[in-house]
Image 1 (cartoon, helix red, strand yellow):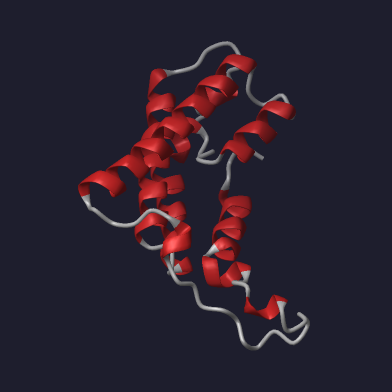
Image 2 (cartoon, rainbow, N blue to C red):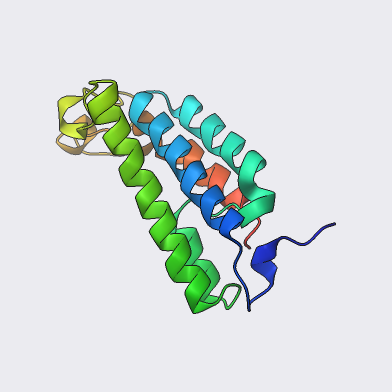
Length: 150
């Protein structure tokens, strides 16, 4: 299998930075447009990883990038540039959604369903959204199972 350019600790390719930027832009746009639909978020992340993973390593998450750096899979320059590309992609997506689609990007302005069938939580806590109702469970499991930076 062809090694991607992230495996080389000495150089970083502009294409991998652009892939991280575009991938993060697409993923955050999906999250902001479909925050009430965890399936869309998980499918969106999977699609982004499949499209750009062989170019950049498929990080698309600062935590994945930080973990790769701490495990010496990427060097300091790659780490910092990936973080910059990811944050710029996320900020650009937020700006796009906020100013061009005129949709709300605030979590506090959205209503999330609460889970009524969780008996393990005491009554005051059962009113809070669970991870599955806000879309964290599918995206976290997708990230850990498909990220090639392990």
